[in-house]
Image (cartoon, rainbow, N blue to C red):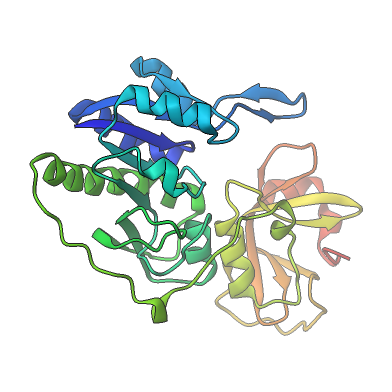
Length: 312
């Protein structure tokens, strides 16, 4: 089956590799190189890097204009396969593909339609998430479901670790659906229940800023949901302080304090910080322009942290 693959981030790479191994990928559609780091040097997407290594033809249009549509038509693709491309395709573009298009989405649709379903599931404290392969529709993430795989969450996942595992699971599910389509099987999709639909938005850098008035369980989820980007952060002595690993303190602490106050260093759990409801144990952190440290090493160099108020 002749396939045009569309995707950009690391989530899509295992699907690209598996699809290229088992089918004929006539082209790869990915985002333009983007500035990164302090120098603003242009960097390619993970999908572009892997496509170049595999020797696949690349398309990096800023917009899907008429010239791009003509270029895609010349490739004579039969099916569009999408994994985290982040754009809505117009009917004019979808009409190029005789077999239509399918999309891999890292959630159990109709839950968490939108651009950041993995971090959204962590933020909500879900005990289960998964991947969905759906038919492409003109409305974002609303197509009929062709297959789903669920995975249990234990509350230790970060967006980074969960993305990696869902990328592999998604590649397996996508391969199963593609094999059936290539064999000429008619897959009866299941329409999504609009009454169960929920949505998520794009994560912004400012989302990582900690509000110590929130409950400890909410802050702990934010630390995991915003790892590896934008990271959960607060301030101390006018400098940014990243929280890299935290947990909800299981015990009680008699010093009430105000939200954000560093109460003590606990030998078993780390730095204890008062929140709006409960105590957060900080196990690993990083001061602006410094290297990441475990809480003991950090406290050795900054003993005045205990008793200070973060975020103030």
